Structures are given as C-alpha cells and as structure tokens.
Image (cartoon, rainbow, N blue to C red; front, side, top):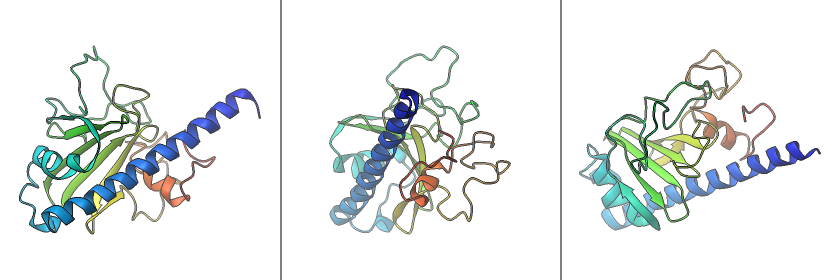
Length: 204
C-alpha cells in the first residue's frame, strides 16, 4: 500500500473504533439511568433536553463539561469560539447543517473528548448527535466525525437503521452519499450494517 492509502485506512479504523465506543457508552448510559431513575417512560423532562442531559445522561459518563442549549442551530459543546462566517458542522455536500441539531440541543463533552448532543420535545422525538473527536476538531462533517441517532424501543439506534437501503440511491435525502441532500445522515447506520466497517463504497 502507498503511504496515503495507509493513512486513509488508519483514519477509517480510528473512526469506526471511536464511533463504536461512543455508541456503546451511550446505550450503557441509557440502561444505567433507568436503573437509577426508573423506566424512561416515567421520566418527566423529555421536553427539556438540558434536564435530560444533566439529570440522566451526563452523570453516567466521565465528563469534562456540560453545555446548555446553543443559542444558534447546530451548536454543540460550544466554547464561545467565533466561526466568522463558517459553520460548526456541514453535510457531506458542504452545506451547513441547520437541522436536526436545533437551537434547543443540549450537549456534553466526555473526559476523552467525545461531544454528545441531545434534543427532544418528547420521548417519541428524541435524537442524539455524536461528534467522535469533539466539536473543536475537524473535519466536523456528517459521516466523517459527526453521526446521528434516534431513540427507538428504549434503545439508541442510528438514524436510518430501518431503511432497506442506506446508500445506493444518491438522490434520496439523507443517504450516506456525498451527492445526496443532507448527505451523511445515515452513515452510522451504514457502518453498523456493514459489520462495523467502512467499506470502499463509503464516502470517506
């Protein structure tokens, strides 16, 4: 293999390792929080992402810091850094992510640098956003270091887990393709479906 190929393969392996670890820790946190606070269906704070983060999720991690909901869309683990016209996160197409990381998203950074965002208006509308290397490190791109999850059957699952096809149709919104509108939304689902691998058809 050439040096650039070796570097790319290393980056792929590192991405998968970090994503799998973050995903595992988040699901473990959900389980532990229910042991302490009862079934999540009786939690009273689903309309407050900040309360869910502070009262249920963050205590189950070794954390560096918690962050209140961002003032602007797409802010996670926001440390006051000015972007000067640039956005914090982008889709694979390079388009700014303004949703689903809504202004009400609360977030926290783990001791080893993972940034996890959470947004909900109810238990049926709960979403998680995982930046595997923290929002202060690039590339800050969906499908590269930013991945999307939802709460389904009391378990954190990747967005698109129930799609029949993740990436072949480039025209489908949210596909794990660089050409797709909101491209990168379902990339965590593709990695998991491919056996926790980044294969050659992945837009890495």
